[in-house]
Image (cartoon, rainbow, N blue to C red; front, side, top):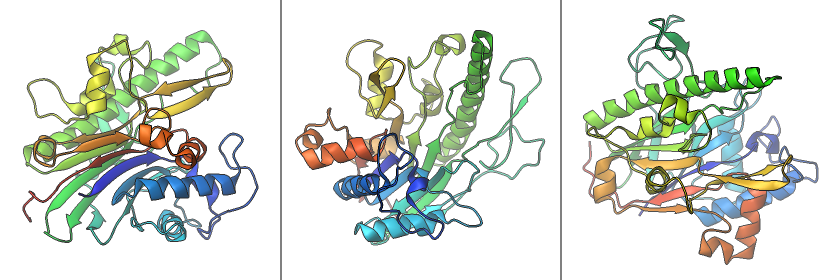
Length: 350
């Protein structure tokens, strides 16, 4: 059964030089109190244990005129002997945090397959290409705003080598809702609301693309870091729903499914799954959050016998029971991988 995963690697870019070589030294990484060599070693342990056939890498190394995401990731995969050793990049961005796919060429071939029409600066209303501009009235004032992605989602088409069947992946890293730059309480509120509106519009845009694939009956996996979920901030009540709910789909329509999202949406109190762990300096404690998801279309959910797993160092008994892996998960990133095992034998070749 192929294993497909998503993993947000905090500042992966800082672990490579401009030639894509590993910086396996004792200099500080971009992670708090972690050396570059230690973070790389920890990532090697985590990726090896994950042993996935396809990993959507969130915050992948930068791609620009001097640096190559593909070269860096393939160098990393070769250094640690990973089966997922080929890399695929979609639209590059300007944040030094790309979205890329590491995949096992013995199981899949993969290509970037963006959908939607290209747009000019005026944008379009109906699911334009993800590197374009989306016209959407976030304020309900009859004057559509122009929405763009700082990190355009990666649309990957996977073809199974054995059967020729295909599965579509959309890798996502939604913009954070943090009110960066605000100095007063009023500015914090204004920026937080603006960021929330933009993120919800991006989720509407993504949902439009999802619906196109679902209506076409295509096997679809949407995965990545949504920086969003039920109950994460007080502004959810203002807008009535989270971006996550928009992407999953409304009642009565074709929906995506993730068991951890369902659990979180189904209860507001009690134990919740978590995929990320952040240290709050002002409060001197850790905050856990559910931010990362692997969502399946209905056919995959019903026929592929999916088995989801959050590789949490404390909540997953297998991870906790292996001290080397437990410590590596804590050192490697502030997020933990989420994987799903799928039996894709039922899929018919295209």
